[in-house]
Amino acid sequence: MDKNKRLDLSYSQMKWETIFKRLLIVMSAIILLLVVGVFFTLIVESWPSIKSLGVKFLWGKVWDPVNNIYGAYPFLIGTLLTSFTALIISIPFSYAIAIYLGEYNPKGWLSDLLKNTIELIAAVPSIIYGFWALFVLVPEVRKLETAIHVTPYGVGVFTASLVLAVMIIPYAAALGTSLIRMVPSPLKEGAYALGATRFEVIRSVILPYTRSGLFAGILLSLGRALGETMAVTVLIGNTSAIANTFKDIFFGPGNTMASVIANEFAEADHALYLSALIELGLVLFFVTVIINLIGKRIITKYTNN
Amino acid sequence: MENTVVSATNFNAWFGDNHVVKDVTINIEKNQCIAVMGPSGCGKTTFLRCINRMHELIPGATAKGSLKLYSDEIYTMNPIYVRYKIGMVFQRPNPFPNLSIYDNVIAGYKLNGLKVPKADLDNIVQKSLTSAALWNEVKDSLYKKGTFLSGGQQQRLCIARAIAMEPEVILFDEPTSALDPISTSSVEQLFHELKEKYTLIIVTHNMQQAARVSDKTAFFYVGELVEFDDTKQMFTAPSDVRTQNYITGRFN
Image (tube, rainbow over the protein chains, first blue to last red):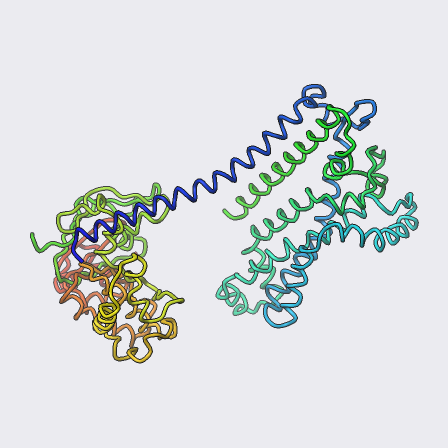
């Protein structure tokens, strides 16, 4: 092929390259705009509430729509408490599954069965967890509460956290499994050759190597927990009042930001009420963003080490 | 000077703030086999990757100065065209795992969307594989996946893939460091035949290899081109004490 024809072809190749690149940028920009748009809508719609209630909305302890008093504090506590409790319960399971499937049993039918089952956990609609827990878990929690001398509601923050924990296991577990399988074998063999046991290899080679990824898995789980609505709404008891002692808050009924919005959105019969609910949504948005940012910072710090 | 294929004048390259190639000036003549050697991190691979503008594919990588293919400034040419004229073979054999041997050889044509009649393609495949000394070994399994070949065969397949585009220059980035001695010698054998048609620039860690295959040798140290001379001269009476130290292994 002569030089000029080849050059022409090169330029047309470059032209397509540029068009393709622009297409990618446009597609990404659309998503970015969408998020900005959602954020903007939240601000606009909650503006009446922001204007009339100010920042005390955040730590107001009373939520009384009838008298037009709105405080988000009980729901902020409810959301953070359920999410972090669920996270703490789920981490040992997620890690155990990830280490087992990633290192001890990465191949074979048992491994596949377990992996698919774990992934199925994430696929089950959350309302089903809500029902299951209502019929199975709530009576058991009631027994426990009687035994430890707290009011045996059965439903409440603790019950919601338990179910939430089950629901968020697959996120950290699946990511962790893939990461642990990707640890280069020369690295592991290096430790085995020095006489390390499997447990020691996991502790001193695999976990440090996958540390930031495993943490990202936790963050993924947490993000899911913060926003989970249906199962929590069914199980949390839906009380907007906040109890006085931690024990009562933890075992008694409560509400999360998501569950209040789900429960009361249809009944919001005046503008300020509706606006306050949307502001709750805005706060939830911010809480999620802030926790994710902190998480990313921690991941970067780990990764650089 | 009309024999000069690739020439650099005060050429520099960076990774971010890291100045990895410093003021390199070199003239590489047609149909020669040039060995580029030096300790790890001396900038030799970076310089090689600048010649076909692979360097700029790494985020944060920049280059400055004059680098020419014949009389054309490489950094103002169309990069696609540059890479068509200047082929490359990498350290690890990297045949495309999803393609057959046949398709691997003509991958350059496929990737670029060049329309070539089937008969011509057959010709190109046979010619390229023959030039890469691989034809006799694979002629009965052209439509099998290239990844079933041995490491040395895979590397020769990659060389055939580069030859198929009929480039002016072929760059080799430590082409035998992942191969066993038998495969290495078959690839080295090939260099002698290839330079009849192409200009070869070979980065190598192996000094014996440089001595065996090259006409001229360039020695890089901490980003600078310390010495560029006939290989025989370089290995018997280097003019720079740093070269002397390196080839005698007294380096720290």
